[in-house]
Amino acid sequence: MTSKRDLPTYVSLDEAAEIMSLSTRTIRRRISDGTIPAYQCGRRSIRVRLDELESALRRIPSARQ
Image (cartoon, rainbow, N blue to C red; front, top):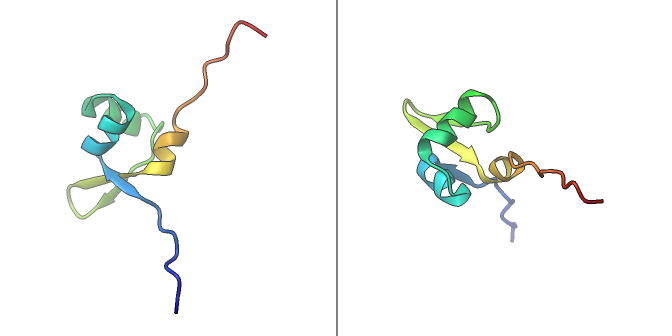
């Protein structure tokens, strides 16, 4: 029996906005400035890989050591 390989999970802009607690407009701006890579499927469908969405976050350094 063959095992199913792990495929990346793609989400829509609405789903990405909900996951990140941002507006769809902000997600589109991050795609435009290159912070979040996006992929187009067909003429209008834009999808974002879930793992790349999570990696777009950056940690804010703390003043405390």
